[in-house]
Image (cartoon, rainbow over all chains, first blue to last red):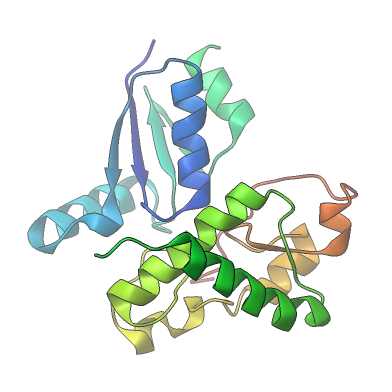
Length: 82
Length: 111
């Protein structure tokens, strides 16, 4: 299973759906709720996201080398090999 | 940040429903999803002083964030094109009737 990292917002419904989908499929993942960050750490993470998604929209999902923006179940499943 | 109560969410739900439905904007039929988003709006109002979109990153500057204060300025075009607003809170009647395919709404902001 490829490594999974997601950038999310704590208040975002699509982000919660993404986490629920990964949990339901027993996928281990790291996540960062960007809206809960402060100061330098927040700026650093915002730069990270902009590198791969200039629109700075959420969820931004990294599965191995695949980047998916938004809760797109079919693309996520395919990237995970489910 | 103090906890948002169920009563606060229900009160907001009733308020918005009575205002928005006559304008043709209905809450998503997924009520738990709507509940979570309304809670997110109240959390954002609590931390920023204004209820900005739960699915967009606010910068805690009302002027800079004014386009994403809910209902966002993108709602009309998004609901017209996709049957749902960006975060999925407001939808068209046809969307709730299953006549429109569910798809991810791309971010218009900054276009």
